[in-house]
Length: 391
Ligand SMILES: [Zn+2]
Image (cartoon, rainbow, N blue to C red; front, side, top):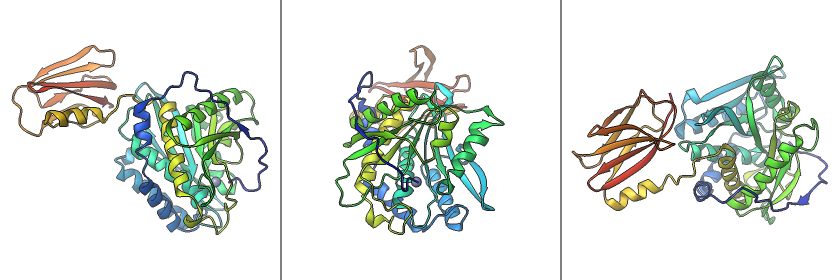
């Protein structure tokens, strides 16, 4: 929701690489955003029509979102809903939580609204919605030190009704801060207009409202810009945050940042905000930037999770170690039966926690929550996989 806003404060970003260095594993995952998935998400979103808060179409879009998360392997226990009413009609925000390994009670929020007004809202905000879905799909099994909340707000177009409700009833309860939020990354209207040279994304920092959180927002927005140049082909434009779901968070002192299209389509809140009029490649590229940045802010594992699979394939041996995350039992399964093998389980400090022989079922009930490496040693060599214990 950015209609008719004054858009004056733009400046060329200074390159501020600082301590942020390129991480190959983050790039590999950013590159797992697919154009096909983005296109499908955008078209399915368009198919629900006008998703005005509290309407059947609005509820249908909510159900569609839940089914997407289930298809990625999230379960109902990862979901929560924040219900509110607008004009006497009920609507819901959808929150999916992925638990962090080191700071489970500190959250990085990536959010965008799924309600629309007047038109199907493919840019405003099918674009942000599609990107959040891709980020959740790709990071499902990637350990992150901070917890991540993927939030789809409703009621945005009626004046940030859903995000206001969430901030004042979930993040804060009775005026008391409940949620420790490291950062709110909002994505709203990044569809662009087909035919434009959409090679730049606007990164929005907090410049007003409460002033005590401006400096932190400036730092995080600089980091967002750096991530964008590291993990996507896009250039960046620094601007200011306004009129979207990060603002209720800002008003409570939380640190916010955001993505917004640079060359405006001016199709928002009209019947012309359609799939045919947006630039799907732009959404794809913003998706890469978002997945790169989300890994940076939530401190994702820097281990290339594809590596161990490749090593196994080279040795001609296939070992599955599952589930991941695991609770009280981990299973080791060889494609071809192996009689003699050893299993060493280490914590992240390198201490040996378990040392076993020839056991395909490993009792992990004595392990604390965290990340461990499981190394399987056979006469053909060693295979190591990171397993999260999360009870
Ligand atoms: Zn919007």
